[in-house]
Length: 258
Image (cartoon, rainbow, N blue to C red; front, side, top):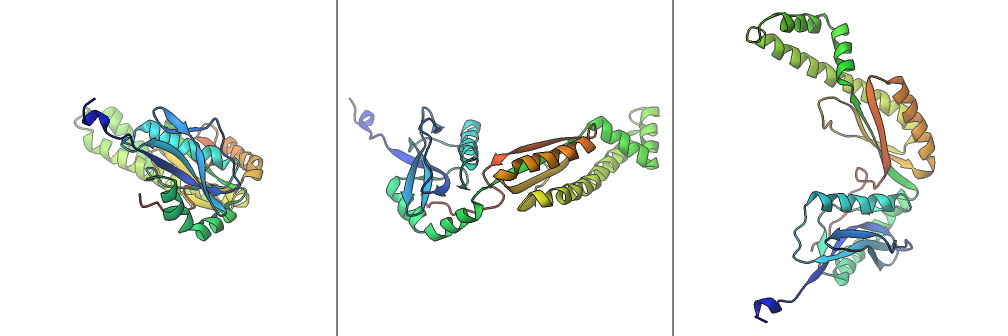
């Protein structure tokens, strides 16, 4: 065997998030890596870190890695409070997890976990039906209807300016409707949630994009409220409720230094 082939195989710990120390890890749960390693706990006092072993030289950032990071945290959030760490937190070993993360921030983590006890994040996301929202805009705006008729009746080159103007009018109108519909959704959800965070739209036809911190025990009530809103908007907005998830929008967790 050559010297190069005798290079020592080094491992490290990937850290997903922080949980109370009395949480038990699922022996079947696996984390990031190929092959994936079991999810285990590194404990210190009243807090613990969710970790799994990875090859120290493994490059991270593949879609599967990101998905597994979220999957581990979201699965935990349904049974225990969890403080998620940003993707990519890798440390040398258990001593580094204990000394650089858990011991240094123990009281801060314990307090945050106590605040999150029994709670999880849910996401309410709605998208306008393309044809329905266009019909709505054209029925409400004489200018939009005029531009649409011009675009349909003129040759493509001649209608260029009107086509651009119509696109801008539609985009601006959707933005205004998004603001109105988001405000309505916030009002509807306020009684069912502890906290709300309005997220930036990720698609031009997004109607609503909200993160909600709610009591897991009140999930049925949240589903009822969102269901009623979905019925009101049937055919106009496709509304979805996602969760329980880790509280990504509501906590800021210290990262280990490596």
